[in-house]
Length: 96
Image 1 (cartoon, rainbow, N blue to C red):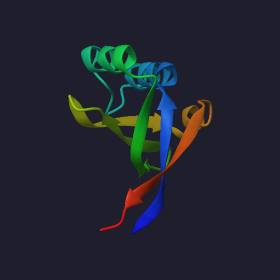
Image 2: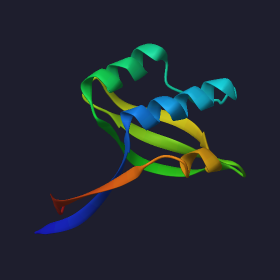
Image 3: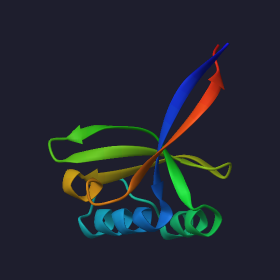
Image 4: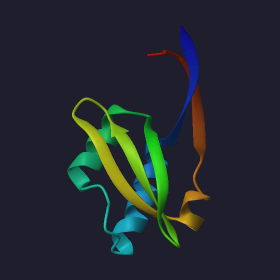
């Protein structure tokens, strides 16, 4: 039995921009340069596993960073998240 799942993703160039904003605003969660460079070099986009409201003005994104960095987090202001191109990957997954 299979079920349809959707994965939201962000282009790595937009991820660089979001991360730069997070560092500039001294957010709690951002990606160190070595990890960000690895993602940009190896991937075109990064899957957003899920996101949740971190406080009244920002999202906390939980990102899949590939085999090397499985789970990463990034704090993003609401208005910045609305400025980037997000995509949705639809896939079929085996149901448990």
